[in-house]
Amino acid sequence: QVHLVESGGGSVQAGGSLRLSCVVSEYTVNRYAMGWFRQVPGKERERVAGIHSDGRTTYARTVKGRFTISRDNAENALYLQMNSLNPDDTAMYYCAARLADYSTLDYSDYDYWGQGTQVTVSS
Image (cartoon, rainbow, N blue to C red):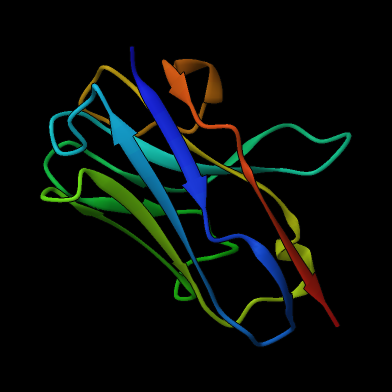
């Protein structure tokens, strides 16, 4: 059974950094596409960063230049380095995996999800 376990969330001040990790089991991170999503109460889950099976990455306009998605094949893990955080980045962050080559925007395209890790940025 596929498991995704996120960690690394927390509370930081604006301008700070966090690195989220997603350790994956029973699924090979470099075989298919994965993504990082975030969600705040009352809003739809949005993809902030994605990585295609070939390693190409894609970012939401709001985080481009500040966030970096990466994967470690040896550790079978996905990461999200978040720099220059601001209060608008406050959300629950989720790691997601799908059985296809491309990381898409639609959360319903993803087959597996982690439990989420909370990120809170104070001004």
